[in-house]
Image 1 (cartoon, rainbow, N blue to C red):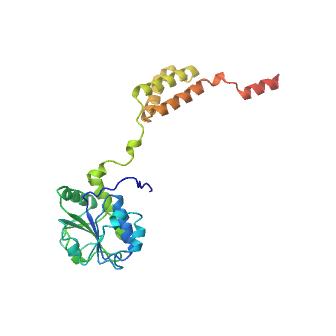
Image 2: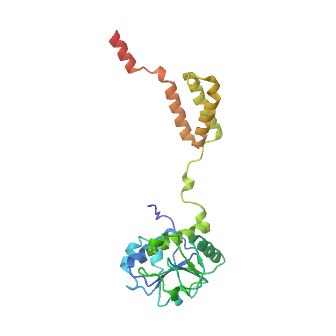
Amino acid sequence: MAGTDTSLKIELRASPAVILCEPQLGENIGTAARAMANFGLWDLRLVRPRDGWPNERAVAAASRADHVIERVRVFETLEEAIADLTLVLATTARSRDMQKEVIGPDEAAQRMAAQIGIGKGVGLLFGREKWGLLNEEVALADTIVTLPVEPAFASLNIAQAVLLMAYEWRRHSDLGTTLPFTDAMAEVAPREELIGLFGHLESTLDGSGFFTAPDKRPTVINNLRTMLERGKFTSQEIRTLRGVISSIDRRHQRPNPNRQKKSEEQG
C-alpha cells in the first residue's frame, strides 16, 4: 500500500515503546521500525541485538523510517529497557505456566491509551524470532497480550506482530478516529439538484412512452428515485446524467444512417 507523503512533517507524539528482546536479523528490526512508523510509534528499544547496532540491513529494511532508526536505544538487560515504563505488555502466542492475566489486542490498546493519556510510559515486549520470550521475561510484564491466531500455526514474524499491535494502538488513540484523505471526497449535490434530475428523467420517460401501464407509474417512479438517491451523486455527476438523458431524448432529431441507407436502397 503506497502513500508516503514526504512533504508532511512527522510529529513524535506520546506512544508506546516497542522492546525487541535479542532480535537476530537486522531485516526484522528494520521492518519492525517501518511498521511502527506506519502508525505513529517511534520509540524502539533493543535488548542485546545479535548483530549489534547500528545495523545496515535494518536501515535498508526500514524503508525511510529514519526517525525511528535514529532514535533506537540498545540495552544490555530487559530490566534496564523497561525501567521507566509504568505498564509493560508481553506479546506471546504460547500458553505460559504462570498466573498472569491474558488479554487481546483490543483491550491492550485501550489500556495503553489510558496510561499514556495520563502521562505514563507504556511498552510492548516482543521476543526472539525462533522462540519468542523467555518465561522470566514474561514475568517482568504486567500482562500477556495474545492474538486470535490459528493455534496450529500461531507464530508471527516480529514485524507482523508489531504492525498488528501498532494498528490497534492507533485505532484507540485520538489519531485513529479519522481516516486519511477521506475529506478529499466531493460533496454530495444539494437536494434540489437531485430533484431536478428526477423531474428530467421522468418527463423524458413520459415522452418516450416508457410507462405503458399508467397504474404502475407511481411504483416505478418510486423505485427510480430510490436508486438514484442511493447514489449520493455530486453536482458534476448529476450534470453528466442529465446530459445523457438529454442526448437520449434528442435521438429522434438526429439522422439515422441505417434508416437513410435502407430508404436509398428501396428508392
